[in-house]
Amino acid sequence: MTEATPPAIILVRPTLGENIGAAARAMMNFGLSEMRLVEPKGDWPNQKAINTASGAERILEEAKIHHTTGAAVADLQRLYATTARVRDMEKPVLAPRALADTLHRNSAKGEKSGILFGREAKGLHNDDVAISDAIIMVPVNSEHRSINLAQAVLLIGYEWFQQTAPETLDEVTRKGGQAASLDELMGFFEHLESELEDCGFLFPPEKRPRMVRNIRNIFTRAGLSDQEVKTLRGIVAGLSRPRDRSR
Image (cartoon, rainbow, N blue to C red):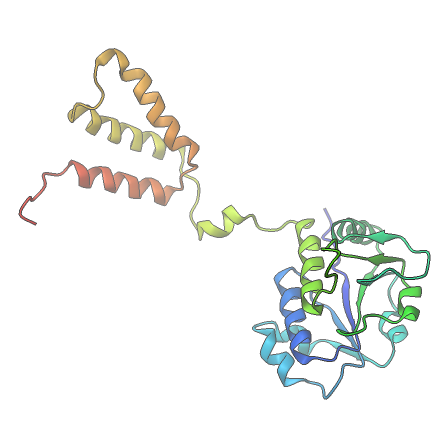
């Protein structure tokens, strides 16, 4: 399957360098790499943006600066505008998850997409929304609809990433370990059952088969890694050694 082309993230007249840097950080978290800036306030490069990027400085270094929204989006085939308020115009309205699906379908057709984010205080101008294919609104508490600029980038980036091929949390937390083989599990079971037999736990004999099955089910449900099986065998070996009561 062809890898999807990530959308361009276009920040229109952002006023705070900290938000630009935090947006870059959110982009890198979720596989987005192309930032475009339309008339950012103040000097550029912006040291506050760099300080807030926290490892995502490359996105800031490669960000393209434009004087108008039109220039920033000229090469795109599809454009989407984020907003926190209803606009007086007929536009499809998508939540971030539906947007992510649309972005992937656009990419499959060879279309380059972009997402517009407006100023922190006032959002996008209606003229920017008017040239967009659809409006993007995040479902939030109706009593407080305002979302920080970088948080909005993060929400949309997260939904985009979930529809690519993200590394699973299980793979992240294993830190290089791999699932234990059946041979390793059987070796552990036999070791454990031998010690339980010696200490008299598997008694009476007629209940032994059921007890063994229950014990094995406990450990097979855990999805043990090879390192965890080694640790468990070490625990069983330690418990089976004679104990020094003087310690």
